[in-house]
Length: 84
Image 1 (tube, one colour):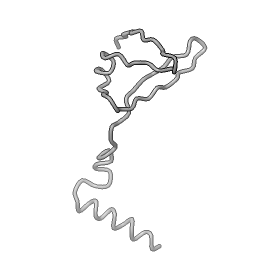
Image 2 (cartoon, helix red, strand yellow):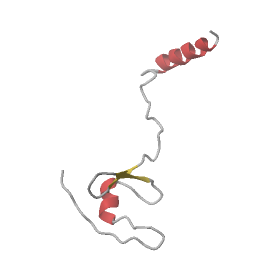
Image 3 (cartoon, rainbow, N blue to C red):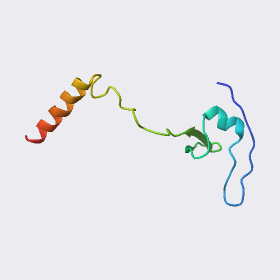
Image 4 (cartoon, helix red, strand yellow):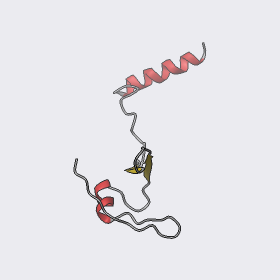
């Protein structure tokens, strides 16, 4: 894993500008959300940055079945279990 270091300045309200090279590499654009994770250690604390998904639509595709019939059978089974 290659390591790139790019220095940024923290502005008075704890704001930073994400360098264009990093934004491009993360695939983020204006309005996207990113997650900062603080990694504590005995040495200096570190921060990990990763983009959050723009949408969760379709993330469970295939979990309840591959075809419409399989999905309908799953839903039917769930609904029938409500009567028990």
